[in-house]
Image 1 (spheres, helix red, strand yellow):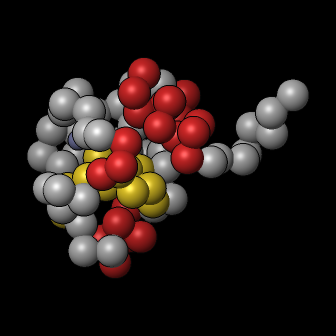
Image 2 (cartoon, protein in one colour):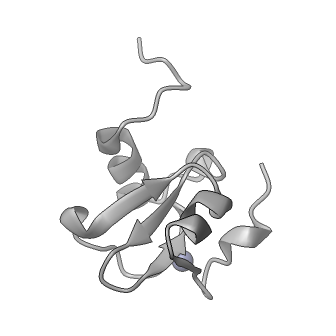
Length: 79
Ligand SMILES: [Zn+2]
């Protein structure tokens, strides 16, 4: 049985590929080619896996130099 608190890249990529709403607020993802970060459920076109980076908070994403997506507005995401 999987530990529900454990996130690895496989789990996170699956979650964003499937727009898994149960993962809302658990993590955010950034796209290296655009410099934008999103919620896992964002309706924007899904990036290639090698271009994705993961963040556990919006602050981490900002610190990493990413900007919030205007489509999914990750700041509005509250757990
Ligand atoms: Zn987005």
